[in-house]
Amino acid sequence: MGVAGSRICEIDASEAGAGNMSVLIGWEVDLRGFFPAQQRIDLPLPAPSLAGHTLLVTGSGRRLRQIGTDPLGNVGAVRVHDGGRTATLHTAPRRLFDKLTSELNSHLAVHDDQVSRQGLHFQAIVHAQPPHLTYLSHIPTYRNTGVLNRRILRWEPETIISLPQGVGVLDFMMPGSPELMAANVDGLRIFDVVLWSKHGVMARSDHSITRAVDLIEYAETAARYEYMNLIAGSPAEGLTADEVKQIAATFGVTSPWID
Image (cartoon, rainbow, N blue to C red; front, side, top):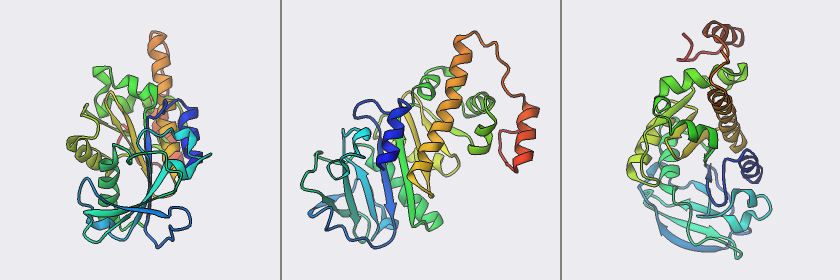
């Protein structure tokens, strides 16, 4: 989580206390050595599929760049109780946050959905605010999943290989709201990364938390190329549809964005 938080900040995707992370652990872990303090908490939504699971979650307002140097001050461990309505929050004596991230509902909902659907024992979720992707979502034309993907997937061969399903675009919804939570769950069933218009992104990976950050970095790099082209007056053609198709065929990639 420390490496992931540092990389998110290196690509300017988490200013100050913006952004948050969570890691789902589906096997038994002993928390006492690191997180001896305990308190019962009510979860913001029922998460029955997470019963008995542990989530490592960043604290509200904490800087992602500081997780690596002080993980115990910036991260709490949530052990979900039977029924998925309550949990025990385990923290360290040097805890630096009052409560967990304000986006906890979206994290819980995605973890619960993916565990119930796929039986996952591990999953990492990262919410960040990459500037070029977020900027594009302020342009009405780009607040369309088809338009955004066809424009950002044309700049590097690696993009279609690494993001075959592309980026799902959601309308602007109030941060932390039930509406955003529900739309985000639906989006991450399909897409590698979901763009919260005028806000940021969320990515998930059942391989590693650094893989979730990789997905954000690939998408943000593609958006930066698109931004560069826009401010230059759109002189570049990018990869043609046929070239993207050839890349996909060479690397065995299936994507809905290949014409």
